[in-house]
Image (cartoon, rainbow, N blue to C red):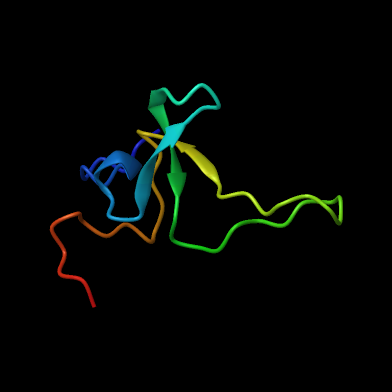
Length: 69
């Protein structure tokens, strides 16, 4: 389901292409950089940015064309 307004993650200023371990970018997935990384259950584990699909959307959408604050 998409927002219907063109406010998909791939068009958001907080979306970053998701690069897999081999260094190739996945065209259908990205990282949401709006919120800080999510902590992991293992104390030695690194925090991870949420992985989203290019067509996902949320209420924090900000156009790539929006001026930086």
